[in-house]
Amino acid sequence: ATTLRKRPLSVKTAAGREGRTAAEAELGEPVSPSARLVEDFYIIVLMGASTPLNLPALRAGIEAQLARYPHFRSIQVTDRDGELRWLPTTVNVDNHLIRPTLDPAAVAANPDKAVEDYVASLSTLPMDRSQPLWEFHLFDFPTSEATSTAAIRVHHSLGDGMSLLTLLMACTRSAADPTRLPAMPPLPTRTGAIYQRPRPSAGVLAFLAWVWSFVVLAWHTVVDVVGFFATILFLKDPHTLFKRVNHAETQRKRIVHRRLSLDDVKFVKNAMKCLTMC
Image 1 (cartoon, rainbow, N blue to C red):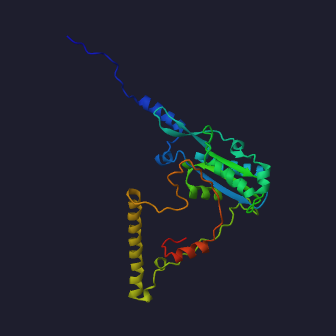
Image 2 (cartoon, rainbow, N blue to C red):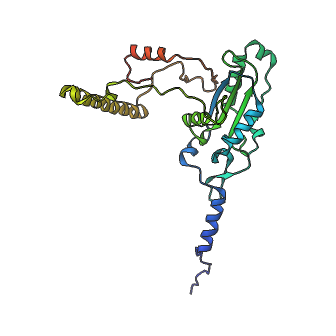
Image 3 (cartoon, rainbow, N blue to C red):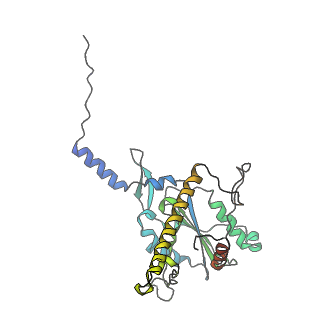
């Protein structure tokens, strides 16, 4: 005769669920799937000022504005189920303000290149995950475009480039009135045919032309979507200077920045008969 092996049964109780929920609530919300996909990506923003660096004012502004956002005062930790979560922590702003030590001779010879070389190195250096994943690297010497410069490095899980720029602009204040946001340039007025709905007195042909502009827009959208997926599946992008060649796997890239006139960009766009508006 065989005997069944006795083993305790696992019973899920309400108390166990409540304890786990309380622990998860203490850790914070889980890291989103999109944030986990960009675990090895950083966003680097360069901002120049027309005045010398005012470290006390910068520190006070970061403490009052930027550091109060939840993800900017949280670190990523792994719970007992192996899931990444945001854990609120205490932010020491001084740990996030970095004054890099650069070669004085290199700064004197070419300050722009000294900043570019340092910013390029930031893309290869890991961030300290024991504190929130954002840093301000401060350069208190003049370049060709600014009196002082800040290189802001933020982990991609905190947001994308546009949301980061919007957040940084929202954290600034007017120099004349610190209680007000700085004045922003007016939004450009779109002048395309699709944005100008004809008046009823314009006639049927004008209305049909307006409807036809929607049809053309929809057609080009479908073509772009098909081309996008075809490029992913079997088409290849043409070779450009920005594309890595096969025999240069270990060749490092250097980040540089240049000013571009939007009028020149639109001129090139019109000359190439492109549909994308800048």
